[in-house]
Image (cartoon, rainbow, N blue to C red):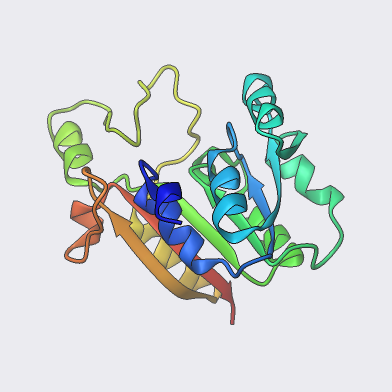
Length: 200
């Protein structure tokens, strides 16, 4: 397992720690399938992905991964209830049109959702806003005119969302600019966040 962790993002390793071996996993907005491939290698999961970008889909197929060509909100409706042990939204939630209804659909498919997103309240983003510019960071790398993101949220925003929807936060992890875990003032110092949530 050590060799499989070489050059693997800490976020991927933390997600792998959460997931039980041989689980059924749905990765929404799976991109080129790097996370699915890693989870298949270290946890032997039965993984499926949904992705809309054709080039990313070709990359998944070349890796031997199962992926369906669809937008997330349309593709998820095809699955029956309780199809998966985990649904993952890693760096895709901010591209969703109706995030609140999507979470309910995810809980229809699984009791646990793993959510990862860039933190818009990260100190570098705050500095850019203070200087009157739209933030550009490692995990928010797009300019205002070519970003796929429809919404920008902070760690505290997501916690408030879970509280209002009565979702239970089972675990939370925060990561800084150098890929290390952040334990202090994450809403200020963390570039990305990963949450595991369930329904109360």
